[in-house]
Each structure stands twice: as structure tokens, then as C-alpha cells.
Amino acid sequence: MKPWTIALGLIIAAALAAVPWLGNDVAIQFGINALLLATLAQSWNILGGFTGYVSFGNSVFYGLGTYGTAIAMAQFNLPFGVGLAIGAVVAMLCAVLVGIPILRLRGPYFAIATLGLNGAMAAIISNLPIAGTNIGLVLPLTRNDALFYELALGLLGVCTLTVAWIASSRYGMGLIAIREDEDAAGSMGVNATLYKVTALVLSAFFTALAGGIHAYWSTFVDPAGAFDTTLNVRMVIMCVFGGPGTVFGPVIGAFILSAIYEVLASEISKAAVLLFGLVIVFSVVFMPKGLTDLAGGIGRSGWRYFFRNIRENRL
Image (cartoon, rainbow, N blue to C red):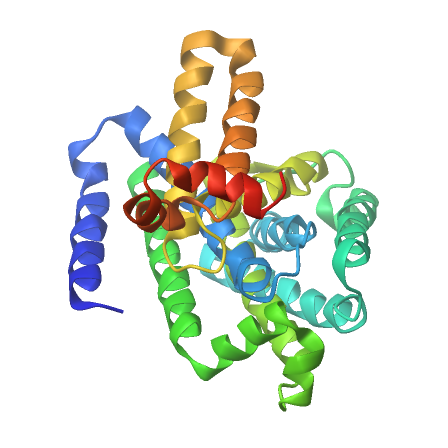
């Protein structure tokens, strides 16, 4: 990573850290949501962006992190940190157990298998008395948005540093080799199963922590909210919009799309979802490699960059 990139990242991080002391309540609450969504997009990027395996099951890890924290705090009166750790461990164990069999699938078969996981896990949680069945659990009330904001910012920072390490490491090169040609990567000595499972476990770890922070912040969890399938769709969209397989692309995509949605929702209410969908469709059609590819593409080809993308990807 270039020195100017590191310096710019530190300046942006310092500016974001000052928001709870300089911004109002609306800005802080928007910031918490955007930071957690950016963490989810960045977590999805570890597997989906670097290996090309499009997972629709990351919301399972989010739900397990949410319920792990909620059960520990609401049913056993354990501290928040302990609950957060329990949720992360449960999510990582789940990633190992389901990752070994389903990561042998490829393409649409893998995507369909991960999509089914979410519904199955939601049904299991809905029938567990310790998880409040389908009624949900209420966590202890804590009104400290600044604390949750800084926790979400710190988690995003650690997750992004992890992705930066992956992008520059031999391990990351192995993941990219799997994305480009898994059979060829295997013939070159890359243990594809081990690489993919560890990527899924890393992704599950950060996703579960984001779920745990959101659970304590919202003070209430239920199966419908914890295992929301649309949440996984948003992770994918934000990562692809920003630039899959890059260090900062998912973070940029998450912040821009979160801001667009908030503006549309506040200005035109019900039509926001429709216009938000159109923004995503046009973005994917004209710049399928994401925002991080946009600056270089415009510099090289000007406005022809957009039409070249349509031709090259046969859209």
C-alpha cells in the first residue's frame, strides 16, 4: 500500500472518529448503521471478492452473532464483551461445519446452498426457548450512541486492515488464484479447500461481531431481523458497487449507497426503494468492476470507459 494511501486513510479515520463529538444525533445514528454495513460488505469481500464465491449465507453469521450476544446478556447476565465473543465463536464454528461441504460446490449451486442456510437457521432459532422462540429477546438498555459508534468504527478499521493484509499476502494471492481458475490453482499447490474455509471463517468472525454490536445497540432481537435475507443482498450490492476484491471498494460503496438511500427515503419516501434499485442497476451495467475501477478507467478511456464495459461484459 502506498504511503499517501495510508496517510489519507488515517486522516479519514480521524475525521470519522470525531463525529460523535462534532455531529448531532442523526449523524451519529446514520454513522453507526453505515459503519456496520461497511463492515458487513468488507467481510463479504474476503470470500466473495477475493475467491469469487458469491455467498448469500453471511446473514447466518450475522444472526448467530446477534443471538450469541443477546442470549449471553439477556439469559445469563454476562457482560457485553463476553456475549460478543460467544457470538463470534459460534459463527466461526458454524462457518467451519457448513463451509467444508458447501464450498465444494461452485457457481450457482454454491449460491443456492448458502441461500438455504439462512432460512434453516432462522427456523431453528425460532424454536429454541433459550432464544425466546419467535418472540425474541430484550437486551439491557444502554443509551450511549457514541460508544457504539466508536465500536463500529474500530471494528471496520480492524476488518479493513485484515483485508489489506490479505490483498498483499501470499494467502491473498492464493484466494485470487482460486477466483481466476480453481483447477489451475490446485495444480500449482494451492489447497483450495483450506483457503476457502479460512476465508469463510474470517468473514464469519467480522460479520458476527457486527451483529453483536447491533444487537446491544438496538436492545432487541428477533429471528426476522437477525436472519434478514435482504441484509445479505445489501452486503453483496455494496461490495460489488464499490469494487470487489479491493481494500477500500466495499467501504466506499457502503457509505455512498447508505447516503443515497437515506436521502431518497427522507425526500421521496416510498419511491426510494425503486430509485435505489435503478441506481444499482445502472451502476452495475456501466461499471461492473465497481467505483475503484472508475477513476483509472475514465483516465485511460474517457467516457468510452462505460461503453467498453458494456461491450466487454456483453451486457
